[in-house]
Image 1 (tube, rainbow, N blue to C red):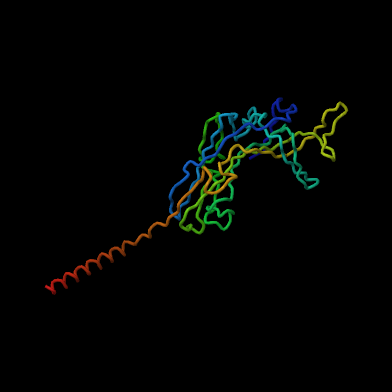
Image 2 (cartoon, rainbow, N blue to C red; image 1 turned 180 degrees about the horizontal axis):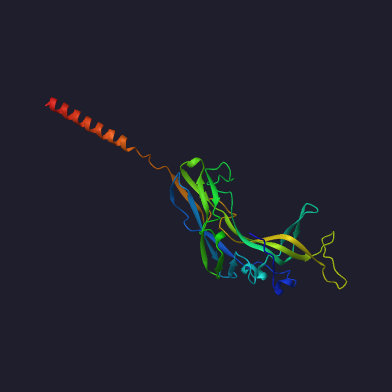
Amino acid sequence: MSKLRIFVSTLALVWLPNAQAAYSGSLSFVQPTGTVDVTDNIPVWLKLSLDATSDPLVFSSVGGGNPPFGINPANYPTSFSYYDSGTSQSVYINNGVLVAVDTIFLSTSIGCTGTFLADGCSSAPYEFNFDTSSPDSILTKQNIALSPGDSLDYLLGTFTPNNGAAPAGNYEFYASGLTMYFYGTVRAPKLDDNGAPVLDGNGDPVLVDFVNAEGSFEIASTACAVQTGPTCPDIFARTAVAAPVPVPAAFWLFGSAMLGFVGYSRRGVSARLV
């Protein structure tokens, strides 16, 4: 995919140090409880719900358009990071304005908490695989248009039992988030060695451009993204049980013959006892 570079409208070219994200919502589990086999792959569906006070979320993953990617420049983040290849250090930018957009995209995340992932995402009964390619993933949707109060279901990913089967028991998962990332050129005040803005002869701040800067903000998260444990109000829980081992048909045939033989033998004994 070729890299796009889109300059934002005149609105974003003026100094907007107070611009901030105005999207707010929540994530909840579509099917929070259930029973599965220890060998089952377990899909995790989430519902994104915009708050009644949120701005509408209009997003086009193909880019282009005005505004770029459908995102209002007034909702761009104002905090960014920039990697300075000359000093091999990261620079953190406050009160920045994204003046040229390379790309905007959504990202899903999980927290390594709960018994599915053994509170560490390693050496756990299950491994988690994000859905990044199916039509059910929010990451593959070309266009999203949600008004305040609207909701959208999407497949976050799937828990897969390690080694083909997980130990029987109860499993819980708590934390997921949905984040929007921004990449492009950010304009921000130049700072002196003491962190104070450098002013020009007219007393205005001297502005500098940071190319390939990155910013982000979280649109929504699950209720237990921070608070974890069985007292959380919204938990994804599954009870994994081992299914009875099926007996081969040949064994059943053999067993049926044995039952017939035993019955016949008893009838013979009974006859003799009479």
